[in-house]
Amino acid sequence: MLPLHKGRYRARFAESAADIAAAQGLRSLAFLRAEGLDRDRFDTVCKHVVIEDLQTDLAVCCYRLLSVTGDEIWNSYSAQFYDLSALSLFQGPMLELGRFCIRPDHLDPDILRLAWAALTRIIDGAGVRLLFGCTSFRGTDAGRYAQAFAMLSADHLAPKQWMPKVKAAEVVRFADAPRDRKIAPDQGLVTMPPLLRTYLAMGGWVSDHAVIDRDLDTLHVFTGLDISAIPAARARLLRAVAGS
Image 1 (cartoon, rainbow, N blue to C red):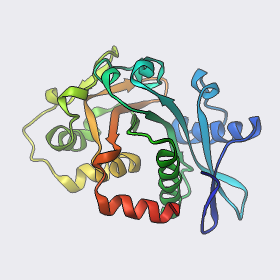
Image 2 (image 1 turned 180 degrees about the horizontal axis):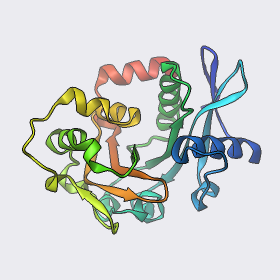
Image 3 (image 1 turned 90 degrees about the vertical axis):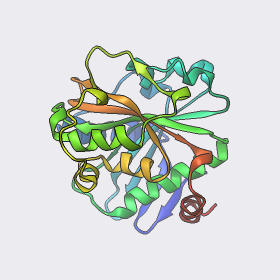
């Protein structure tokens, strides 16, 4: 499946403790905005993908993956924050995408393209039917993201049969958000994380609430993507970049 190259970048699986430490260091910069290592118990059970700049040998993007079935979804990272009893009935392989981040000072769009191309190879190779995870909005001030949350509530909620239920102690329910302002799509999209925008462009859906995560200083939203629902043109483009 990997490695995979695009321009000056290479995507590969982490192969050593040093590789995982490099990913954890990048995660600390992206999520905690500090030097150090962001790590938790899920690191030992996940596969890690690292994207490197071949000109500098620097890790510029990373994410981790956990393969589960419906019976195993309780073991996922997301299940700490969401009641996923509905998804426990999902038939077929699922893949949790977590801790996705890009080095803050690296804005080359090829990095995101390669990240998704590598993920496409992995999904196709494993026959994954549902991709899911938590996408993070920086900070815990929900007011900053009122337009984004209004867009999600209006157009991108999960199908009822898969809707995650509230489990966390602190949440922001989209239905409780102020409704006296007209939804401004441009403003809403600008404040969404790039990962979430990509999910939505492929037909992804979200929970009806965001979870306040004090440890990471984020608001995160459960996000799912039924692989069979990806528009054909988009799927062809992803596979073309992936060389599959």
